[in-house]
Amino acid sequence: MRTLLLLIAIAPALAQTSRFEAGLSLYRGGSLRAALDEFSASEKAGEAKPARDFYRGVCLAKLDRWPEASVRLLAYVSAQPSDANGWYWLSRAQLLQKQFPEARTSIQRALHLSPKSYEALRTQGEIELELRDHDAAYRAWIAANKLNPRDAQTTYYLGRLFYEADFPNEAAVWLRETLRLAPAHFSAMTYLGLCSEQLADNDTALRLYREAIRQSKLQKAPYAWAYLSYAKILRVLGNDTEALAVLEESEKVCPEAHALSILGLLLVARQQTARAEAVLRRAIQLDPGISEVHYRLSLLLRSSGRNEEAQAEMNRFKEVKEVEERNRNKISAIRK
Image (cartoon, rainbow, N blue to C red):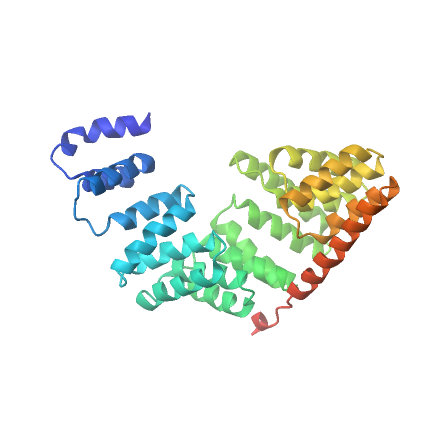
């Protein structure tokens, strides 16, 4: 309906403008699919519009059509290599396709052209984190924060980095700042809850996890890590029944491998072995790179006499565990 109303509103102008300009009006109005149609029509009409590939690429990126976005944006920066925005959006598309070395090259080009872009620096930090250069990620995010201290996503990334480096007090400072800037940031609530746990404040952690779950559902984006963290602390506090209910809800609204692994464990304890096996196998389908799931499935299979299958899972557990150990990287530079 919104797109139809927008088309009606701009119809008189469309007759006097190019298809590209019509697409640009739709793009600026947020009607991305309709804008793509106009950009395609512009190309078919032979309109000479160098920026068309850029806007098509951004539309596709905002619609999460990352491979198509990459094609358009790569074509654009090949023709317009001095446009920092083109390189920035190309890096985003490559990052979200897990093309991390390519994304790093693209974001470096963007920053060479526009070194004061906090968004580009924030993206650089995301890429460096994926490439396991935690020091470079920290430097990029600190630079982004200096350029725009009000960007809540940057402060969240810094808080999470400090948490993962096992500095809960420092992490909590950044996460509280995130919540001051964006009070409904449920990811920041979750990680602040984890910091509270490390600092032996379970009451605060419980409150934060509950609020993170509530906010994520309100935003129609149920957050698996909030459910998982809440279930884990409930188990620590001896409330397996409530933890099971939390994980069962998580299974329905935001299935995630780590949460399913613990759900499988609780189901085994209740002798619901058939369902436990199904849950653990679903976890492996979602993420085969979590060693504990293979271990738990191996024990379950062995307990039912399926020794050959159990041994295969145990072998897989050992392989995945070795990879996890190699990837474990302590972060020390961020104290500097």
